[in-house]
Length: 310
Image (cartoon, rainbow, N blue to C red; front, side, top):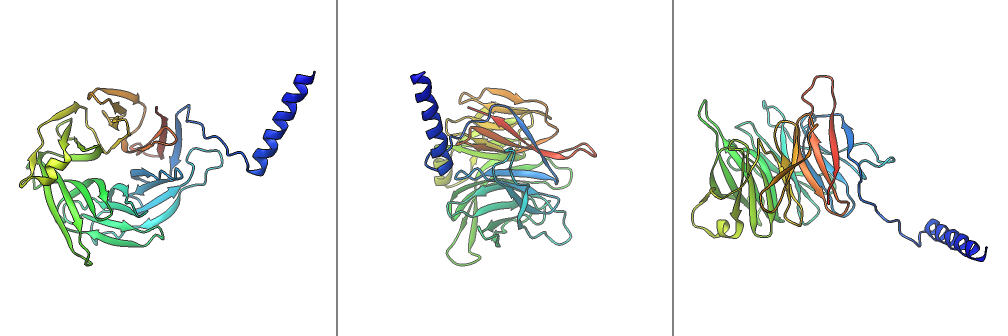
């Protein structure tokens, strides 16, 4: 009886301290997959490490929307974060989205062969043009190196000729509008996703059904662009890509699946029932993968799929 009283008292004290805020709640990892409806046309996705807020590019509005604590019972709905300027006379379309070290977001406009660009979005929602070089390049992947330097994957296509693409490094100067773009990897068909693990750059080439790896420092230091030749993995129609700190890659694999790709280049399907996977983002702190599932079925809404990972 005395032991029971002690346990009861201890439990009561724990609940009291928790109510007072003295005991921080313990965040538990996601245990089952979730599907969160999305009323729009999503493409790219990014997760803010500090609080788990999710940012999504929406082609329907040509903007960025956000929500906090995605998948929680009390999670707020998606709300507008920023509207990206659309090119006059061109279809709206946004590609990858990424965080810069200063809390800003960078986002690419695909451009459809005439109006590609990269935009900088401040925490206040203010949107500024970050780069508009080579507007005919159709931009897809985006990877931030630092506040003023980022990588862009792109391809160009003329008429019935096969697409040809590469990866470039874009650098913003100190003066407004001072931007340079230099190709560091070529020989690709339709490069889409970009991810880095250490000094290794991974590039998903959708046209070749391959993921290539490149020494990023060597590519940036070379006098001429390096040809993509080192095949890391063979994957059916890979798309935008993300990497976890342990070196695991995540991307679309096939028409309706998402795969993890081990450090040895071995793909494993982790979800096979998506409509049309697009962007992926790793939420390291919460051990989950956020995947854009863009609807291709009339009357069926798009969704964000939240999958548990290790």
